Every structure is written in C-alpha cells, then in structure tokens.
Amino acid sequence: MTIWVNGDEVPVPLDARVSLADLLREQLHLTGTKVGCNQGACGACTVLIDGQRVLACLTLAVQADGKCVTTIEGLGAADSLHPLQAAFIEHDGFQCGYCTPGQICAAAAMLDEAAGGIPSYLTADLATDRIVLTREEVQERMSGNLCRCGAHNGIIDAIMPSQGSTGHDPCDLCPGVVGRRRRADGRRAGCPPAWWRHQSGRFDAQGRGTAIATN
Image (cartoon, rainbow, N blue to C red; front, side, top):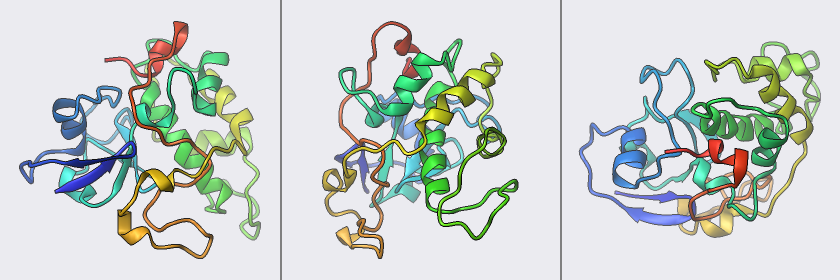
C-alpha cells in the first residue's frame, strides 16, 4: 500500500492488522506520535488523516491507504514552528510533554472544524458560518485529549490565541491524493486544510519546545 506521510509518498508492505500508530512509530520511526492507553481514551496518539483527527492506536494502517497522514513532525520544523507549537511553548501548554503531540494535532484539526462551521455540544449559534470559539467551546472540543500532568489551563491558553492562524496550502505536497480533485471551497479533496503548514522532516524545537516531539 502507499500512503502520504508529512508530504512524502511512502510505499509500505505490512500486515493488515498493524495499527497506524505502530506503522508510524516502528516502521517509519516517527516517534512523535505517542501511545498512551492503547484504547482510544486518552488522545495521545492523535494524528491527522486528510485533515481529520483520528486515533492512531485504533486506526488500522491499511485504512490510510492512498490518503495523506500528518503527524506532529509534519506540522512544522525547528526553524519554522506551526503557530500552535509556538503557542504551546509560550503558554507552557505541557509539563512532561508526552500528550503534547496529540494535543497539538487535535487542536489543529479542531480549529479547522470550527472555522468550517462544525458545531459542538456547546455551540450557541448553529446558523453562523464561522464559530467564535469561547474557552468553554475549546474545552469541550478538546475533551478527548487528556493531560495526566494537569496542564489543561496552559493548553487552552495556547489554543485560544491561535484562532485564525494561517499557513501555505499543503496540498501541493500531497500530489496524487484522491486524484487531486478540487472541492467546492477550492481545496483538493483528500488533502489537509490550508491553515497549517505541512512540511517534511522531523520537528526538533530548541529549549522547552523539545517536549513537543519527544521519543
């Protein structure tokens, strides 16, 4: 099978029973993706498939065949942090850092969901084209990602000012995904939303940022 991982085409022979988390960590050595509960309860393994957040521990790798997978390593680089990565550093949105890759991947998708008008349980105005995220909305939308260190206040602080952050269109780094079809909004079908940067290479920030993608 062939998948696109952080902009690179990756042909991988594998057993149909291998999870996406094991593929990323054990075969592709992208160890930024963490496995916590291995039951889909903690959110530490969150990655993006075609721009949507998924739990890599519960997702079979074969389900990503022909699709575009984004891990924490693909969101930014040491000299070009994703806005959320920079915000997590600025607002101390972590302690041990184990859950941080999943938190950031989930937050990236969550902000795009809200920008697309997808409501949550707490959304007050369902008729709006763009949802204004309150602190309570962010807490609700991020409730699937747990921080065992209790750094949730810093995590929410980091996400709040990141609303509206933009980056270049990552679709050009995912050629061939779903035939590069254009959607009604101008993006190619099957590619991640444009507001985050989608780059190849391992993320290795300096100083406190090393907690964002640890081994």
